[in-house]
Image (cartoon, rainbow, N blue to C red; front, side):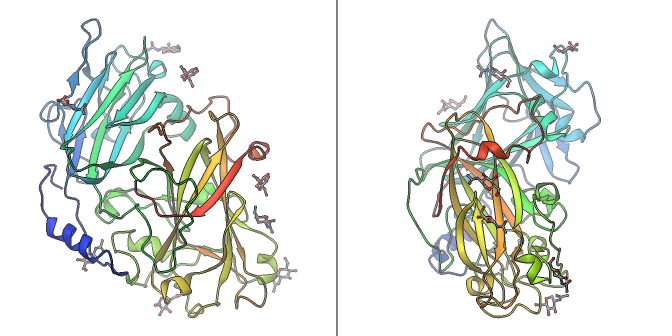
Length: 445
Ligand SMILES: *[C@@H]1O[C@H](CO)[C@@H](O)[C@H](O)[C@H]1NC(C)=O
Ligand SMILES: *[C@@H]1O[C@H](CO)[C@@H](O)[C@H](O)[C@H]1NC(C)=O
Ligand SMILES: *[C@@H]1O[C@H](CO)[C@@H](O)[C@H](O)[C@H]1NC(C)=O
Ligand SMILES: *[C@@H]1O[C@H](CO)[C@@H](O)[C@H](O)[C@H]1NC(C)=O
Ligand SMILES: *[C@@H]1O[C@H](CO)[C@@H](O)[C@H](O)[C@H]1NC(C)=O
Ligand SMILES: *[C@@H]1O[C@H](CO)[C@@H](O)[C@H](O)[C@H]1NC(C)=O
Ligand SMILES: *[C@@H]1O[C@H](CO)[C@@H](O)[C@H](O)[C@H]1NC(C)=O
Ligand SMILES: *[C@@H]1O[C@H](CO)[C@@H](O)[C@H](O)[C@H]1NC(C)=O
């Protein structure tokens, strides 16, 4: 892909704007800009997926704010058991440094790639830093090593979504080390988004209950993006925005249900734009199984760890593809988000208009806590509709995205994972103290 901010497909973008008043928008929009920077690299690099990354020595070199004359350096990872691009080299500094990217107004993805390891004389575990983008704090006192240890991964990506206003020509991303510490980053992506991707729901029957909605120009952090019942979908197999989708296996908190698959189906995007999610997402799902009596006895539940003190945007993706499910009331179910009823009667066919048509629903849930600096589990649970209301006592989910919404201080940062903490899904007693509001919503990010 091109790393220049070329204005190709602008007409497609405008077309989308014009057509967004209608319910159906089946346009595919390649990004207007798609910048991928291998921080610390001196030459252009090709990533494992074939994308090209520019070195920050060639382009987008950071502005330095040296403390005691100390500028950033390019450093090579001491341990190289990971993908070479963008992880073998990093930009490392004990002073603040700032990247400035050319952007256009609209929504943009920011992806920060981290490989916490020893770089030169800089110790893996002694790095703590803040990251800001525009007016937003993305990360604060952030430890990439604690995060990687907690995730049990060598490398990881933090993804954010920001609104770029009309006047801004530049997006500045600044790394600020905590004193006596160092900041580092291995790679940065800045990729434009279609205007309405995460800014609301243009499905006919969206309920808009406007309680304490965050400001319309809030920023988002992607917490989870899951292909329910399926395998991971790589950034290259996304709809052109380089989003990665994970398998949901490790987030199930109940019986696993069954995993229906219809690999022959070509999802018909008549309700949502076809860039919303890749077709693969809608070819697999998780449902409860054929024994309705058994299904009535449990909730199909996912447990997702989140930071307290924030509002979250939950996007649930659905597509009925089993031949038995054709008309309204064939499969009707309840949706609970954080133990609150989010849908009394979810009916995918009613929402989509038919078998094979993907649809999504957005919900916002506010998770407060008496001490805001902690983590808890957000439960998403499905339960069959009552006998008589539904032909099959079952439930279905195809995909799930969960975003943290910036708070009134323009902050998205949560605490570091506690190294002595037990793994997720093990702290039910904490949930008791949470005050929760669930409401379906329209949100601009
Ligand atoms: C990094 O810090 C840890 C903990 O303070 C220490 O055990 C280790 O020896 C240090 N490594 C280097 C390369 O300095
Ligand atoms: C962004 O960075 C550029 C280049 O360092 C600088 O000229 C500009 O003032 C910065 N803008 C903001 C809003 O900080
Ligand atoms: C979306 O549909 C258009 C045709 O309307 C097609 O050109 C494009 O490849 C599709 N995009 C995706 C991601 O499927
Ligand atoms: C359905 O599940 C119930 C409860 O677990 C069980 O008693 C019953 O035997 C099951 N029926 C079939 C046909 O498997
Ligand atoms: C897959 O979906 C298609 C189109 O809706 C349908 O004709 C076919 O029977 C489905 N196959 C399976 C195995 O469910
Ligand atoms: C399903 O979850 C809801 C919300 O937490 C709860 O009220 C209900 O008792 C659960 N049902 C079962 C069968 O576990
Ligand atoms: C920074 O994070 C570390 C590790 O989580 C924590 O021990 C320390 O107290 C934090 N510092 C501040 C100022 O919050
Ligand atoms: C949510 O449900 C779980 C299990 O059903 C329970 O342990 C927890 O207390 C509930 N949380 C709230 C806030 O009701």
